[in-house]
Image (cartoon, rainbow, N blue to C red):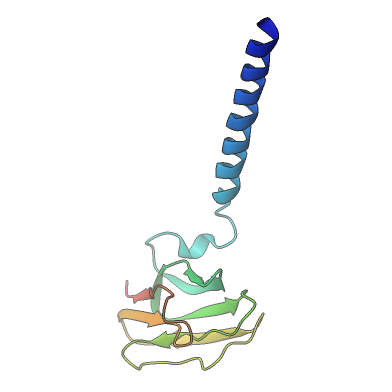
Length: 127
């Protein structure tokens, strides 16, 4: 009987460890890769990635005249296209970049025209 209890305890510990490991792998705690775009303070230049069919960060705060550089880290082409027609990257190949300068204050929502299932993202330009 003692042997069965011990096996149940070990099995429970293994399941809990696996659950914690799985949960931990799904959450990135490293915010150092792009600290200039994670806050609400506008910056002069920002970087964004397209990866796992998502734009990251989803919101960028930029100073007027500032630039954003998007890098495609997916295994397929994407676009960065303003929903109001203000800018369009055309197809961005794998590992390629697109840079756009935002001269005018405002809110710019963009999408990927190739993959309509992707969520939109936003650049907010202003002080």
